[in-house]
Amino acid sequence: METVNDFSTEKPRDNLTNASFFNEQDQNTSLNSAEIANIWSSFMISSIQSCIIKYLQKTVEDQETLGILNYALETVQKHHHRAMKFFQDDRHPVPQGFTDNDVNLNAPRLFSDLFILCYIEKLAEIRINGYSTALPMTARKDVLDFFNECLASSAELYNKVTRVMLSKGFFIRSPYIETPGKIDFVKKQNYLAGFFGNRRHLNVIEISHIFNSIKVNTFRKALFIGFSQVADSKKVREYMLRGKEISTKHIKIFGSIMIKNDLPISMSWDLGVTDSTIPPFSDKLMMQHIRAMNVVEMAYYGKAFSSSTRNDLAVNFSRLMLEIGKYAEDSLNILIDNGWLEEIPQIIDRDALAKSIHH
Image: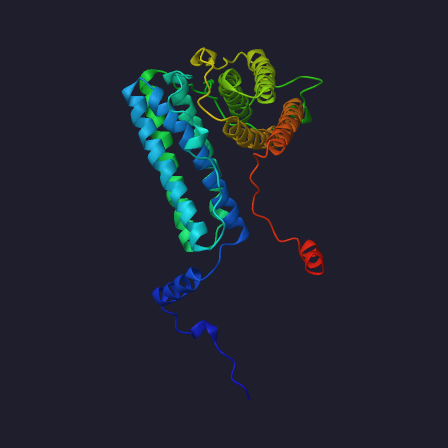
């Protein structure tokens, strides 16, 4: 009779030996679709940010802010070159991205030092969110190590810029609330009400999302103002002005909710833009940058929608997310019309390949 193995008494394998075996196997594994997607995104965003930071270094006045920019550029370029090496080692076409041809380092100052700090804060936040999403989608050890390092250095960049902003009194804090005297539980369905009946006050999760939406749109409004002043193409200029109008509208909607709940709203950064009209960036770079930010804002609104238990807030986040979605679609049309949209890697069209062989 065949002997049945008793796994309960089987001698444990050497973990180090197993780890070495799997690492050796891992090195011979091609990048999977999720790894390619996230490395590709890292490469493209890093190439955009590298161009922008180089220009900001030339125009910044405050030495502490210059130190933040130096660290940011070092971090971004390191991530960019590592992403490039992944593609080269995997014999994958290296994206074109953006180069020094997309930035004019001799252009006059467009943004104030305050805006520059806010920009780096937003850059670090976007990179943290992006890499934390990429990490659990990754299998290969060297790619995991890469995203872990990217996440750590992006968090350090956020820490650095936050400390400087706090020391200068520029950091915008979320509103404070009174400390509750006790815990409580929801007892009535009107807890969800927002359109009719007794509308309850905002909870801290809802406040955080509304406040962040005001902060993001205030930043975007200032960026739209700057980009609209220096855009070369009329279509790009009009697109940026439309973005400014949308951001202004969203600030008013979320601001009115805060005011109705006796909460303060964030400061304005409109004065962080100079009157320069000389382009520091190509229209292609500015459009791609805004397109990437549109994706980020839709993600913010999606998270806020899923976290809001008051039905009027959920509806607001949902409809405003759709508005950003339409605005984002229009950016794609401009990019395509001008031949500026670099294709994301995709699977082979087998049907088209078969047809081409027989013709």
